[in-house]
Amino acid sequence: MSHDAKTRSILSFLQAQAEAHPALATEFTVFEELFTRKLWHQLTVKLEEFLTLDGTAELLIPLYETFICDFKHKLNKLVLARIMCAVARQYAEPEKLIAFCEASIEECKKEDKQAACYITSELARMLLDMDRVAECKTRIETASAYVDGTAGIDNSVQASYCRAQAAYFKVSGPASEFYKYALLLLAYAPLSEMGEAEATSISFDLGIAALVGEGLYNFGELLEHPVVATLEATEFAWLAQLLRAFNAGDIAKYESLVATHHKKLEEQPALLANTNFLKEKITLMCLTETLFQRQGGANGERDISFGDIAAASQLPLEQVELLVMRALSLKLIRGVMDQVKQSLRVSWVQPRVLQPAQIRLMAERLDAWQGTVTSTLNFLENETPEFA
Image 1 (cartoon, rainbow, N blue to C red):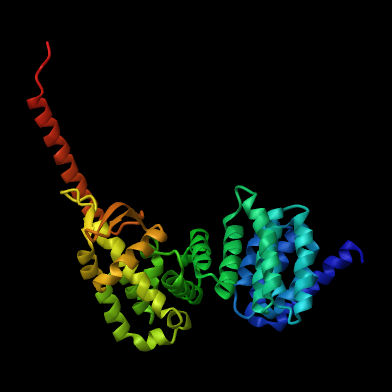
Image 2 (image 1 turned 180 degrees about the vertical axis):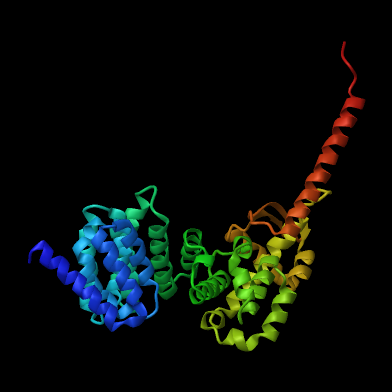
């Protein structure tokens, strides 16, 4: 087919689409005008807008095959990759979807590896939707090799990669890995840029992962994030309250929330399956918060009795030693136990993202420390004889 004949065919297709879909007639008319005038940048922008409109999904395959394929080599490759992924999702047959994505990856790889990485990451999520977890993992590993070895990657590519990783670990675990990649995702694709459903879903999943994830004993970063505000504006406000109780190591508040919202908690399999772990976790967080409150005080308190730990953690005295050993093994604290004196000398407590109240406490300690240093300096100046 000659170039002129092909152009006439494309214009005829656009006009037919405008007649067949009156609600989108304006869009197809604009496509026709921009294509005729060869305004490729404006056409690119319009195509991206078209992907977000209602009722366009079923039109994407014929639009791509008849229209976009004619000038796709003129498009920004990353934009083309996003268009290709939107088209791929319209294939009902899994094998056709995979074949289309693989061909698109090979096509983009020649000119823009970022675009190829984007499609690879999106394909990984599509495979996960088909329950093809092993294939999903393989695709993620391919994308990971590129992401880990490349600097200056576009935010949309990073977001796509983190989405794929988070989706994979949500299915396969562990929760701590999901938590890591979901938080990274929000660095590249803020909640404010997500749809309401996705923003609520990822906020909820992050909250659950923070609670049940092993090695996650500091929620300060999460509590300062819009995730919590998002939860508080939904039916999952109880989860935000639970996260605050854990971060503060507030056992009484935790037990009150469990009693009040036990039905909602029981509806969450991850929470139900980790009841004992959650109790241990809140107790450990209570211990670290208690030590944080005492360590570095005006009197330089570093020793705490097992009796004080038992009172704070609501544990029998005979269980305190096991609690301290657990905290030491998890590297939440450093110190030495004195079993004879039934006390713990603390030299270090795990660093944390501080809440406003904790920052105020630190400021008070610094003021007290400054006063002590000044007082000591004055004493030494007064007591030390001057030498000729």
